[in-house]
Length: 383
Image: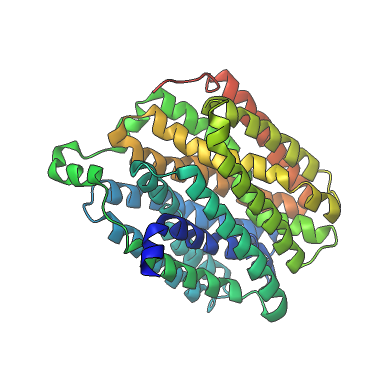
């Protein structure tokens, strides 16, 4: 059994590392509503979480890049996020809850980017491994939705914490990549964020990501409102996310095959066009049948975008800056726009309904698609 775990440790890590997201993200809005929060307060809480993730990305990214004990850094992040999640069960006061949720995301937010960088640095099959993460997310939201329907939404935080404990145990089985050992021996090569900001290509890609990733991340919070508003229930939300995130896994597995025919730069433009069509459709408030029947749109969008954009960031910077570039992307190009989308999305939902929220997301996708071409990001770059 131990030999099997060691052989597939990267796949197991990604499966369990994405279980906490699947358990909490799609249902956090419903939990907050159940303890008396309105749409604006839901937006503020989730925005606080992603805001903390921005700060966490900067702090943990620098610690990780310059540490010779990277496995331990990630293990500490896992355990702190899980512990704070359990503490949140004891809180119902709005301001205190927002603070605790921020602590969860300060530790949880950056960890995926750091693990992505580690896997890519090791030369492993990142698209396939990331696809298993999508599968973990899909299974988690389906199981969590079914259990929450039967026993209450509090269970999602227990699942969240337990999955991070398992993830930390798996991470113990990893070894430090040789690249990081060399960095330890040559401390004069410590990396700094200022170097990234001076890179024009990095900044352009970061600006694009700001508009593209916000709606993608915020959809995890607001889709349940869209689905339940159309007549569905919590178990149905779980089924929808099982199909959607499951299709992400399929497309992530297909990415290497697609890359042999279409370069990363072109694949991302296809994904963004599909995302625009998806959010426009959602802004019309379709039935639960249509929402379930178009599950594959999320697969195309997230399955391609979430893999390819990480590879794109790694591609355009020096190798010694790769891990910090990915961590910075997760903070400023992923978490920061999610703050805005979660916050404004909640306010819009209170005043114009969930359809208004998704119309806002669609407008952001129009901007992201335009920026992608105007900034020349669609042009293939050679390594």
